Amino acid sequence: MTARLVVLVSGSGTNLQALLDACDDPSYGARVVAVGADRDDIEGLARADRAGIPTFVKQVGQFTTREHWDRALADTVAGFEPDLVVLAGFMKLVGAEFLDRFGGRVVNTHPALSPAFPGMRGPADALAYGVKVTGCTLFVVDAGVDTGPIVAQQAVPVEDDDTVETLHERIKVAERRMLVDAVGRMARDGFTINDRKVRFGR
Ligand SMILES: Nc1nc2c(c(=O)[nH]1)N[C@@H](CN(C=O)c1ccc(C(=O)N[C@@H](CCC(=O)O)C(=O)O)cc1)CN2
Ligand SMILES: NCC(=O)N[C@@H]1O[C@H](COP(=O)([O-])[O-])[C@@H](O)[C@H]1O
Image (tube, rainbow, N blue to C red; front, side):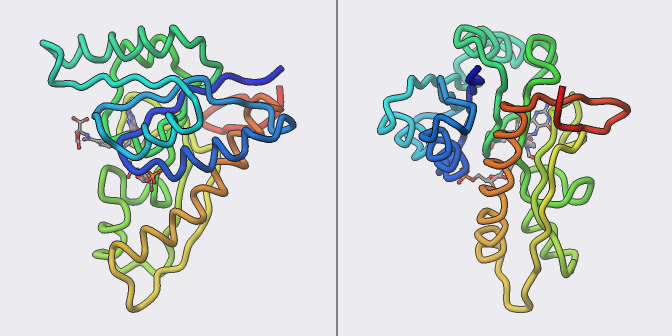
Protein backbone atom coordinates (compact mmCIF):
# COMPACT_ATOMS: atom_id res chain seq x y z
CA MET A 1 0.00 0.00 0.00
CA THR A 2 1.28 3.48 -0.85
CA ALA A 3 1.17 5.83 2.17
CA ARG A 4 -0.62 9.14 1.70
CA LEU A 5 1.44 12.18 2.77
CA VAL A 6 0.15 15.69 3.44
CA VAL A 7 3.11 18.10 3.63
CA LEU A 8 2.86 21.53 5.34
CA VAL A 9 5.35 24.26 4.39
CA SER A 10 6.03 27.97 5.03
CA GLY A 11 8.95 28.77 2.73
CA SER A 12 11.17 27.60 -0.07
CA GLY A 13 10.11 23.96 0.17
CA THR A 14 13.39 22.21 -0.65
CA ASN A 15 12.53 19.44 1.82
CA LEU A 16 9.13 19.09 0.12
CA GLN A 17 10.92 18.88 -3.24
CA ALA A 18 13.13 16.06 -1.96
CA LEU A 19 10.00 14.15 -0.95
CA LEU A 20 8.30 14.86 -4.29
CA ASP A 21 11.38 13.56 -6.13
CA ALA A 22 11.54 10.42 -3.97
CA CYS A 23 7.84 9.74 -4.54
CA ASP A 24 8.44 9.58 -8.31
CA ASP A 25 9.77 6.07 -7.65
CA PRO A 26 6.80 3.74 -6.93
CA SER A 27 9.02 1.56 -4.73
CA TYR A 28 9.43 4.51 -2.32
CA GLY A 29 6.07 3.54 -0.79
CA ALA A 30 4.54 7.01 -0.35
CA ARG A 31 3.00 9.81 -2.38
CA VAL A 32 2.27 13.43 -1.59
CA VAL A 33 -1.52 13.90 -1.87
CA ALA A 34 -1.63 17.59 -0.82
CA VAL A 35 0.58 20.48 0.25
CA GLY A 36 -0.64 23.11 2.71
CA ALA A 37 0.80 26.39 3.96
CA ASP A 38 0.18 29.15 6.49
CA ARG A 39 0.96 31.86 3.92
CA ASP A 40 0.52 32.66 0.21
CA ASP A 41 3.08 33.19 -2.52
CA ILE A 42 5.83 30.88 -1.36
CA GLU A 43 8.08 28.68 -3.45
CA GLY A 44 6.89 25.61 -1.53
CA LEU A 45 3.37 26.04 -2.97
CA ALA A 46 4.79 26.75 -6.44
CA ARG A 47 6.73 23.46 -6.26
CA ALA A 48 3.50 21.60 -5.49
CA ASP A 49 1.66 23.37 -8.33
CA ARG A 50 4.39 22.39 -10.78
CA ALA A 51 4.08 18.78 -9.63
CA GLY A 52 0.30 18.86 -10.13
CA ILE A 53 -0.42 18.37 -6.41
CA PRO A 54 -3.44 20.07 -4.75
CA THR A 55 -2.56 22.95 -2.41
CA PHE A 56 -4.34 24.90 0.31
CA VAL A 57 -3.52 27.92 2.48
CA LYS A 58 -4.79 28.55 6.03
CA GLN A 59 -3.56 31.86 7.42
CA VAL A 60 -3.92 32.41 11.16
CA GLY A 61 -5.05 36.02 10.53
CA GLN A 62 -8.08 34.84 8.57
CA PHE A 63 -9.57 33.22 11.69
CA THR A 64 -11.02 34.79 14.83
CA THR A 65 -8.92 32.62 17.17
CA ARG A 66 -5.88 30.38 16.98
CA GLU A 67 -8.16 27.45 17.91
CA HIS A 68 -10.41 28.14 14.91
CA TRP A 69 -7.34 28.20 12.66
CA ASP A 70 -6.12 24.92 14.14
CA ARG A 71 -9.51 23.27 13.55
CA ALA A 72 -9.75 24.57 9.98
CA LEU A 73 -6.23 23.31 9.26
CA ALA A 74 -7.09 19.92 10.75
CA ASP A 75 -10.38 19.71 8.78
CA THR A 76 -8.65 20.47 5.50
CA VAL A 77 -5.80 18.05 6.15
CA ALA A 78 -8.32 15.34 7.14
CA GLY A 79 -10.08 15.76 3.79
CA PHE A 80 -6.97 14.33 2.12
CA GLU A 81 -7.02 11.24 4.38
CA PRO A 82 -3.29 11.27 5.21
CA ASP A 83 -1.43 8.33 6.70
CA LEU A 84 1.35 10.74 7.70
CA VAL A 85 1.49 14.55 7.99
CA VAL A 86 4.95 16.01 7.36
CA LEU A 87 5.80 19.49 8.70
CA ALA A 88 8.68 20.51 6.42
CA GLY A 89 9.70 24.04 7.38
CA PHE A 90 6.17 24.79 8.68
CA MET A 91 6.57 27.85 10.92
CA LYS A 92 3.45 27.47 13.03
CA LEU A 93 2.83 25.47 16.16
CA VAL A 94 -0.03 23.05 15.61
CA GLY A 95 -2.50 22.90 18.48
CA ALA A 96 -4.56 20.48 20.52
CA GLU A 97 -7.28 19.80 17.97
CA PHE A 98 -4.76 19.09 15.20
CA LEU A 99 -2.85 16.73 17.47
CA ASP A 100 -6.06 15.02 18.67
CA ARG A 101 -6.87 14.20 15.06
CA PHE A 102 -3.40 13.23 13.79
CA GLY A 103 -1.35 12.73 16.95
CA GLY A 104 1.36 10.11 16.50
CA ARG A 105 1.20 10.55 12.71
CA VAL A 106 2.71 14.06 12.43
CA VAL A 107 6.46 14.46 11.95
CA ASN A 108 8.54 17.66 11.88
CA THR A 109 12.00 18.20 10.52
CA HIS A 110 14.13 20.54 12.62
CA PRO A 111 17.56 22.04 11.78
CA ALA A 112 19.35 21.17 15.04
CA LEU A 113 20.22 18.12 17.09
CA SER A 114 17.34 17.88 19.57
CA PRO A 115 17.01 18.46 22.45
CA ALA A 116 19.48 21.29 21.77
CA PHE A 117 18.31 24.53 20.13
CA PRO A 118 14.52 24.14 19.76
CA GLY A 119 12.37 26.78 18.06
CA MET A 120 12.60 28.86 14.94
CA ARG A 121 16.32 29.77 15.04
CA GLY A 122 18.10 26.40 15.37
CA PRO A 123 21.13 27.19 13.13
CA ALA A 124 21.57 30.73 14.55
CA ASP A 125 21.34 29.50 18.14
CA ALA A 126 23.85 26.68 17.49
CA LEU A 127 26.30 29.14 15.89
CA ALA A 128 25.92 31.66 18.72
CA TYR A 129 26.51 28.95 21.33
CA GLY A 130 29.73 27.89 19.62
CA VAL A 131 29.01 24.18 19.17
CA LYS A 132 31.35 22.31 16.81
CA VAL A 133 28.73 19.81 15.71
CA THR A 134 25.05 20.42 15.07
CA GLY A 135 22.64 18.70 12.69
CA CYS A 136 19.02 17.89 12.04
CA THR A 137 16.27 15.91 13.73
CA LEU A 138 13.05 14.30 12.53
CA PHE A 139 10.58 13.81 15.37
CA VAL A 140 6.96 12.90 16.02
CA VAL A 141 5.20 16.15 16.92
CA ASP A 142 3.67 16.57 20.38
CA ALA A 143 2.22 19.56 22.25
CA GLY A 144 5.66 20.98 23.12
CA VAL A 145 8.05 22.90 20.89
CA ASP A 146 10.41 20.37 19.27
CA THR A 147 10.08 17.96 22.19
CA GLY A 148 8.53 14.93 20.48
CA PRO A 149 9.98 11.39 20.18
CA ILE A 150 12.96 11.30 17.82
CA VAL A 151 12.71 9.32 14.58
CA ALA A 152 16.10 10.16 13.02
CA GLN A 153 19.08 12.49 13.44
CA GLN A 154 22.13 13.44 11.38
CA ALA A 155 25.22 15.27 12.65
CA VAL A 156 26.70 18.17 10.64
CA PRO A 157 30.02 19.94 11.40
CA VAL A 158 30.16 23.67 12.16
CA GLU A 159 33.04 25.39 10.30
CA ASP A 160 35.01 28.31 11.78
CA ASP A 161 33.92 30.71 9.05
CA ASP A 162 30.25 29.69 9.00
CA THR A 163 27.48 32.26 8.83
CA VAL A 164 23.91 31.32 9.77
CA GLU A 165 23.20 30.94 6.05
CA THR A 166 26.17 28.67 5.19
CA LEU A 167 25.54 26.52 8.26
CA HIS A 168 21.81 26.21 7.55
CA GLU A 169 22.49 25.27 3.92
CA ARG A 170 24.92 22.50 5.05
CA ILE A 171 22.30 21.25 7.53
CA LYS A 172 19.62 21.25 4.84
CA VAL A 173 21.67 18.94 2.60
CA ALA A 174 21.76 16.36 5.42
CA GLU A 175 18.17 17.13 6.41
CA ARG A 176 16.69 16.35 2.99
CA ARG A 177 18.47 12.97 2.92
CA MET A 178 17.37 12.17 6.49
CA LEU A 179 13.76 13.16 5.75
CA VAL A 180 13.48 11.11 2.57
CA ASP A 181 15.10 8.07 4.16
CA ALA A 182 13.06 8.14 7.40
CA VAL A 183 9.67 8.98 5.86
CA GLY A 184 10.18 6.18 3.32
CA ARG A 185 10.90 3.72 6.10
CA MET A 186 7.88 4.91 8.11
CA ALA A 187 5.70 4.48 5.01
CA ARG A 188 7.00 1.07 3.98
CA ASP A 189 7.71 -0.57 7.31
CA GLY A 190 5.44 1.27 9.76
CA PHE A 191 6.73 2.40 13.16
CA THR A 192 6.05 2.10 16.87
CA ILE A 193 6.59 4.54 19.74
CA ASN A 194 7.23 3.10 23.20
CA ASP A 195 8.57 5.14 26.10
CA ARG A 196 9.73 7.83 23.63
CA LYS A 197 11.64 5.27 21.54
CA VAL A 198 10.62 5.29 17.88
CA ARG A 199 11.34 2.07 16.00
CA PHE A 200 10.67 1.16 12.40
CA GLY A 201 8.57 -1.96 11.81
CA ARG A 202 5.07 -3.04 12.83
N1 LIG B 1 2.83 21.43 18.37
C1 LIG B 1 3.97 21.57 17.67
N2 LIG B 1 3.93 22.25 16.49
C2 LIG B 1 5.07 22.36 15.75
C3 LIG B 1 6.29 21.83 16.23
C4 LIG B 1 6.28 21.13 17.46
O1 LIG B 1 7.33 20.63 17.94
N3 LIG B 1 5.12 21.02 18.13
N4 LIG B 1 7.46 22.03 15.51
C5 LIG B 1 7.32 23.22 14.61
C6 LIG B 1 8.45 23.84 13.96
N5 LIG B 1 9.12 24.85 14.79
C7 LIG B 1 10.45 24.69 14.83
O2 LIG B 1 10.97 23.65 15.03
C8 LIG B 1 8.50 26.03 15.22
C9 LIG B 1 7.74 26.75 14.34
C10 LIG B 1 7.11 27.92 14.74
C11 LIG B 1 7.24 28.39 16.03
C12 LIG B 1 6.52 29.65 16.42
O3 LIG B 1 6.66 30.13 17.52
N6 LIG B 1 5.73 30.16 15.47
C13 LIG B 1 4.87 31.31 15.66
C14 LIG B 1 4.71 32.14 14.38
C15 LIG B 1 5.95 32.54 13.71
C16 LIG B 1 5.72 32.89 12.23
O4 LIG B 1 4.60 32.81 11.72
O5 LIG B 1 6.71 33.19 11.53
C17 LIG B 1 3.45 30.79 15.95
O6 LIG B 1 3.21 29.58 15.80
O7 LIG B 1 2.62 31.62 16.29
C18 LIG B 1 8.01 27.68 16.93
C19 LIG B 1 8.62 26.49 16.52
C20 LIG B 1 6.19 22.99 13.69
N7 LIG B 1 5.05 23.01 14.56
N1 LIG C 1 11.57 25.39 13.38
C1 LIG C 1 11.29 24.99 12.05
C2 LIG C 1 12.48 25.19 11.17
O1 LIG C 1 13.40 25.89 11.47
N2 LIG C 1 12.38 24.54 10.03
C3 LIG C 1 13.42 24.54 9.03
O2 LIG C 1 13.14 25.40 7.96
C4 LIG C 1 13.85 24.92 6.81
C5 LIG C 1 12.87 24.85 5.68
O3 LIG C 1 13.54 24.68 4.48
P1 LIG C 1 12.74 24.35 3.14
O4 LIG C 1 11.55 25.29 3.07
O5 LIG C 1 13.73 24.64 2.04
O6 LIG C 1 12.34 22.92 3.19
C6 LIG C 1 14.39 23.54 7.19
O7 LIG C 1 15.74 23.60 7.54
C7 LIG C 1 13.56 23.19 8.40
O8 LIG C 1 14.16 22.29 9.28
